[in-house]
Every structure is written in structure tokens, then in C-alpha cells.
Amino acid sequence: MRVLHTADFHAGRLLRGYDRTPEIHEALVEIAALAKSERADAVLISGDLFDTGNPSADAEAAVFDFFLRLRDAGIPAIAIAGNHDSPARLGSVTGLLGWIGIQMVAQPTANPLDMVRGIETKSGESLVVGALPYLSERRLVKAADLLNGDVGAWRQKYREGMGFFLRRLGEGFRAGSVNMLMAHTTIDGAVPSGSERTIEFDLTNQYTLSGLQLPAGAQYVALGHIHKPQTVSEAPLAAYPGSIIQLDFGEGGEKKQVNLVEVEAGRTARITPIPLASGRELRTIRTDLDTLEARLEREKEFTGLLRVVVRAPGGTALPGLKDRVLRVAPNSLAVELDAQHEELALPELRREGLSLMELYERYWQERRGELPADLRAAFKEADEAAREEIPA
Ligand SMILES: [Mn+2]
Image (cartoon, rainbow, N blue to C red; front, side, top):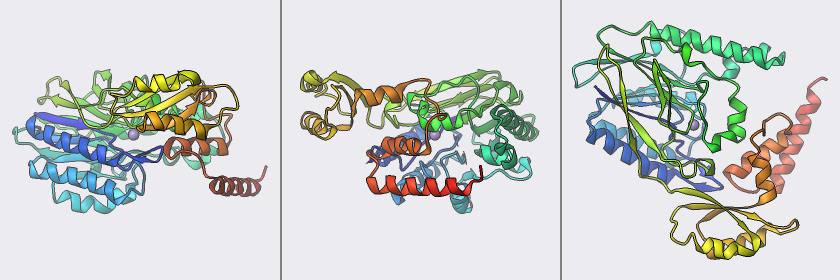
């Protein structure tokens, strides 16, 4: 049987205020066409369909159009919620999606075997998938434990909790069927894209799973969460197809793909990556202030989106610099002064040591640009009020 595996659409994603949804839709149209031309028996979608829990109508239209294209091609699919998805929101359309052959597993269920789904494929073999949606670290590791401050203990509890679910899902495997697992999580040793080394990744990367915890009976483990395509385990075979377009500058230059998995019951699976052509390329260029225009001229042929990092003496004003850049390269999304960027790029940058305000500011900068003064003031006020309520 032939199974097409994809993940991390992030429909609704804003990059410095620029809506990537049309490009994500284009990539989804491409993937639906590939599913058809590659004669896929089923499609697996390993979470982060949306970028936020409250996606725009355009983002929903892009994803639902993708599902309808699969339906038109007669290809069933199984999807799980990722950490960016709202389980409740995906849950609200789960019944409807079932009518067009999309099995959505939005929330973990009390009985793990309820998360084991089956598809009778056209190949004649049946596909059994243990589909584990994203489990919030905070829910899995009890709130009480989070308060005692021992990071090592939380990590261990997370691993134990995930291990429990995966083992139980493996109990749903059937001899004579093709058996797979799906999960939205970080496996030890997975290499993040540059983008995920920013705040968001640092907030979550302390929770990982070992490849050894994956049940041996799984012929393929369809992973989501890490945006750089990679195989993280050979036995059982486990892979991230990665995101479907370059979502932010950390993913600049990364080739995107879906995985075609060919497998029969009881046999070893084989992955064939299929490159994706959709989405604008992202590129970061670095230049000195006095060679700015000449350097930008060299990017004239580049049709993607640029981030321009300028090495400039202290005191250089950003607004004037932005105008200079945009005059030559109107496709520039971001203009930064080097000092500021170097600080962000430090590999040892971690959540620790940053104030909530700094984290919020960086998050905002990545998604929308400069943090507006009124929002800064409101955040500061809320932060201070919250602090006063917590007894020392
Ligand atoms: Mn993701």
C-alpha cells in the first residue's frame, strides 16, 4: 500500500505581519494532486494544521479545500491535532469531516484504543493507525508537579506518560494489517530548523521522547512538530516530513517535501521523499551599511522574501534604513540591525534569563514586527498585576 505522510501546514501563519496562507493553500493543492498522481491509498497528517487555535476564515478555507480535494480523489485521511491546533475547534468539525473520509483525532481519549483508527484501502490491505494527538505537557505532567520546579522530574514524567499512551496504542495493532503510529512530539536527536531554535522551540524542547519508546510493531511512525524533514529512527522507522513551505527565516533555503511510504503487512516500509515546489523562498542576507544598495542589487532576480541584516554603527536609525532597503528590494519583509540579530542568534539563548516582557516582545517581532507601545504598556501592567497576586 502507498501512504502519503505530511504535517505542519500552519495555515494562517503570519511572518512579520505578512500572511502566508495563500502559499500554504498552494502547497496543499500541490499535495492533494500528488496524492492522486502517486496513487496514495491514504494520507496521514501529523498535526499543526493551523498556526493558531483561532485561525482566520482563509486559513480554514485552505485546509477544508484540501480535505475536499482528497475526497474528490477518493483518498481517505487520518489527522491529529498538533500543539498549535485547538483540540476543541478541530473537535467541532470532526463529525462533519468523517462524512468525507477524513478521520480527525483532536483530543486524547480515556481509552487509548479509541485512538486507533482503521482504513480499508483500495490495495486490499487494511491500514491500522494509532493516532495520538498532541498531549499538553502541562496536562500530562500534573500541575502540582510543575510547581515543585524540578525540570528533570517533569521530563521524566512526560516520557513515562507518552510511553504509556504509545504502548497502549500498539496494543491495537493487528496481524495481517499494515500498522502505523502518528504523533506530534519531539523525538530525542531530532534536528530543529533554525526557526524552531527561537523562543517557541525553547519553550517546548525540554519535553522529548526516546525512539526506544516507540512500539516495535509499528511499521512506520508518522511524526509532526519538527519542521525540518528527517528520519529519526530506523527500527521502528519514524520520520518527520517537515513543514510544507518555508515558514520563517530559520527555515530559509530548506527544501520541503512529503513522504510517500510504501509498505505491506509484516514487511519493512520504504520512504520516498517527494519534493514540494510551492511557497516563496525565504532568504537572509547580511551586509554593511555602506554596501547596502550594491548588495541588494545582487538579489534583483530573487523572487522570494528577504530578511536584511545590516552591520551598522550604533545609533543608526531603523526607520530610515528600512526605507533605503525597500527602495531597492520591495520584497524585504524584515530589516534588522546586526547587534540585535546576533543576540537573537546565540545558540545558548534559552527561555531562562529572559523576562516575560522580553519573550513577548520577541514573539511579537517574529510574527508581526515591532511591538506597539500601547500593547507593551498593557502587557507590562498585566505582568505586574499577576506578580502581585503570587505570594513569595
Ligand atoms: Mn509545527
